[in-house]
Image (cartoon, rainbow, N blue to C red):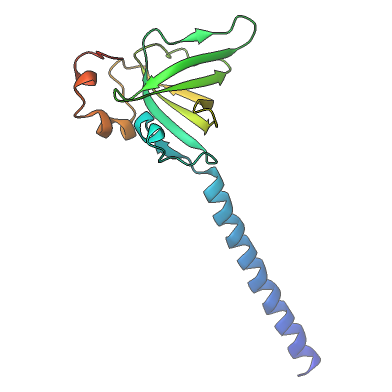
Length: 150
């Protein structure tokens, strides 16, 4: 093998290695930054990994919103009419956030079962339900009857 062949082989090896590392990094990043959509029922059933970024969808339970007096910490419950999960969020909530409103909270499930939200999204229409949650609530009588339990 001549010096030229070794140089070409080294260059090809570096290019293939670089492409492999780039693809591996992209796959890892895609796994880290993707959020799994879950409902309170799935969380209570233990179907949710605790070490992943999640999007919790549901409706804010009436009478559950509590504001801390000395910080921006807000605690509220989210329900899908079957189960309820307590959510903690520190920050300013969207102007359209209110009890009985459909929301998406993005964050992580804590060991104690509470959901620590990093982001809370709310929609302006009082009939809004996140698309992922609409299928779950579609046949649920408590949702259709004017948010009976919610």
